[in-house]
Image (tube, rainbow, N blue to C red; front, side, top):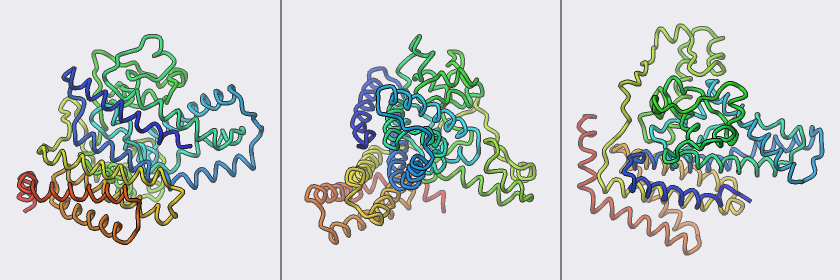
Length: 410
């Protein structure tokens, strides 16, 4: 049973509640472009996770069947021990994800938002290829694969609610468990907060291993990453650090540096690369959030396209056993395409309009070639119709937002 899939409606309900609090309190913790960017990254993460999970889970199963030291009977204490042990493994997975270049390249997606709200919790990596290694000790100890999946899902679900600015410090609870306050610290790029508070459920690991930092009233968190993403493209969010590491690897003169750069501490660059290709230093006193102004039409259209991407993604996740591997890959590629196209719409890129029409052509071709359930055909067909009406009857608004970019490109 996919516990996370069943938790999705609760996630969105809590987002709606937080939006109502936003309205009631007059806060500005949400922006349409940033939130859609976070949500599309989350959809991509779940899509690629379907395919990525096959190899790591197979390795875990083999390790469990061949090397398990104990046969642990099912009981309440087994589940409790598994839950605690998983969080311990998660702590080190998470910590190394901040302290090693190649692992940070995957994890950075989650930190790339310059806002902090419940949609940020869903901004997950679609390129985390090595995290499974940290959980192999559970297989060696004898925890069944289903136990790993279950406690891992519960751990991830717990982490959702801590991504909010509306909940203050929680007294004694702060000492043992991860809370919104100490997780706000984790997402901040202030110097005092960098590389702190890695726990998923228990903050005790951070207190034990010296990585804890309390949220300070006099030092308000500035969210985001030092090398700002400056894009709403979820694909770029997943690959931009890999791209930088690849460039540095290419430019490095020593072959040792070409290898070491991937495994050195985050931010490390070979001396010759640092000298010949310096990166701009961040001045947080001059920090300004990345933003692109959108018309109401553009916002509504972007929300509609995100809904379409989610719908197709949920179709796959709810019926994954009914699709062949090739079909799964094709659907994942379509979701990737739709997510990138939606990101370009949010950035007012001229290319976005052409990509959107191609997307509608792909959906129409699918409806013509394949016999799908009537409710699916009606949903996809209705989405195309509404989207086309947006493009046809709101062309003036869209062109107005694109004209400055078109002039700049010329």
